[in-house]
Amino acid sequence: MDSLTLHVNEVLMVSGRSVVEKLYPEMRLRQDLGMDSLELAELTVRLEAAYGVDIFKNGLVATVGEVAELLNAGQE
Amino acid sequence: MMPSENGLNFFLSDCSGQIRFTYQELVEDLLGGQPKRECASETGLLYRQLVIWLGQIIRHQPQVRWPGKSATGGGAQWLQPVSDSLAGRVHAMDFSDSSDLTLWRNVFLHSNSQILLETSGSSGQPKQVWHSMDTLTQGLRFSDRHRRAIWGLTYPVDHLAGMQVLFQSLLNTTPIINLFGSSTSNVHRAIDSFSISHLSCTPTFLRMLLADSQVHPTIQRLTSGGERLDARSLEGISGMFPQARLTNIYASTEVGAILVSHDDGFVIPEYLKGKFRIVDGELWLHESLKVENRMNSSDSNTFSQDQDDALFWPTGDQVEVLSDSPWKIRFLSRCHEGFNVAGYRVDPVRLETIARTHPMVADARFYGIPNSVTEHLVACDLVATPGCLAPETREWQEWLRPMVARHELPRIVNWVSSIDTTDSGKVKRR
Image (cartoon, one colour):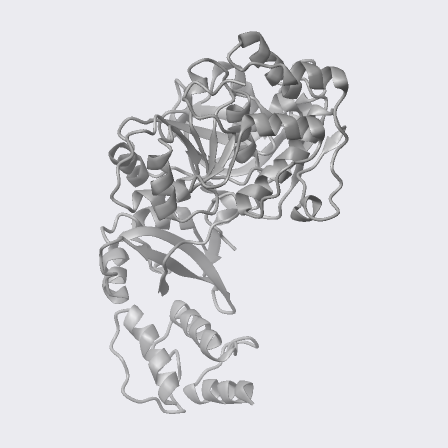
């Protein structure tokens, strides 16, 4: 979760927005973190570069927890 | 065989001057059908390829293709020696004699060979186009003045621009210094050590040179083409090349070198007006301009008067009209260099032009990263101005932000030592 936090904050900083100190699995990417399509696109590009997983390959996922699960599944 | 007007008696040299091939050597090898000297360097390989390729042309081989590296190695299929009568005439040539010089040129220009070229591939799959010696040497100049040139070759010879430099030099018996693939510092050194006077290159190559603070007073002619020449580069040229006259060329493998200018715009000559159309900002040309449609005419450099609407084809070049009378256009970018981000079309060439105005950015390449959300995401590679510390990425993005739309802001920024280019020197888009 710590490395995911770093990537999420990278995205938020590019947009000039405040970073988050901690991510919780139930946090929703769009409604709670306020991510729009460009920010989601950047997040998926960064995560794919880092972990080789396209988290949105099968459609948008809603929460931080779902993203973490996909990353973990991709690492196995 | 007399030295050229500039006093340098060689045909081809590498950028250090250590590997050289003379015109005497070239003549012997062309007539004999194979190079006598083994030379395992890039310029040595180029020379061997030229002996085969030019040798095929002077032997009027019906179809001539650029020989691959394997064609020049062990077991290579070298050519048969030319006829005794041709060999006798060429051996006796004195390049200081104008009629002998004409003979030398005609050995090549009168060839019936069709010569295969591939397009640069900077914007799609490479295409194959067959040229004649007429269409390949279109626009070249032969004169005493041109015999004083010392050429820097920055293109691969198997592309149109490289072939034009080769023939411009070869048919005036002037030296060529092979700069293709050399580092920027070696190029600067070679320009000075050889007193190179003529340089033909892409704007991308030029930007790499302009990033360094050097002055080259020996350059008299600078020819640019293949990409849009941006305003910042135009300003930099006069500083680095104070004696140079700029020639900007619009050329393609399909039509050859068709427009020439001395700034970043091109005036469409009267005799070509009916052959040019602009549709939704894209340049369309008439089929009669294609070399394959001119090769069957009695003069490959005149065009039929046919202006049938159905025979125009899209070039993929975005243009803007600078004036209607004279009809003057400026090239903006290749249509398919753009990509979509969240439904918006992004022009990477426009963004690169803006990015290069930052004082600490020497060069930039913008591209789209495919993703499942927005189709592409804008990213860029940046080269820092030599001698400057690259700014913080965030700081640079904040500088850029007011000048671009939100979807155009590069969200992935990489600081690199150089920009990837294609074989012919254009920014690599894929």
